[in-house]
Image (tube, rainbow, N blue to C red):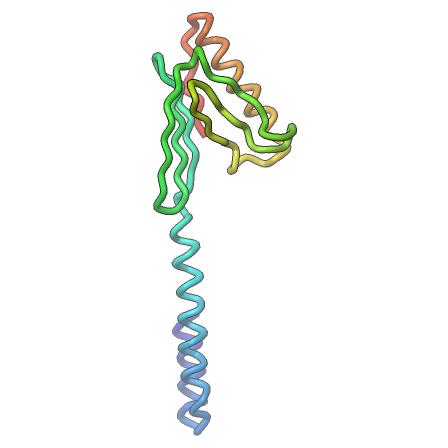
Length: 132
């Protein structure tokens, strides 16, 4: 896209339209800036792992990574405001909202799967790691 834009601008510039080349460069800088912003969030993620005696939630957004660890016996799983809102995991004075990368209509199912994994942990059944 950049090469085509510069080629077209070069043709017009060679024919005397000198304002076209600076405008093409402004356009390319805008496209590059948007590409940089998109690339910065390309690896955003939420990861929930229940292993041993720890429930670990890691949330990455851009260059910011937040990690919260809970003892599974004390974790509460609740929607923040309603069935389609983010899911809040809380316990021991800590809390974190998850489900940003899950469609709103599927968040209730995610909450149920987390509750089921925690119930199995309480019963002594080894749950599969829950991960998003």
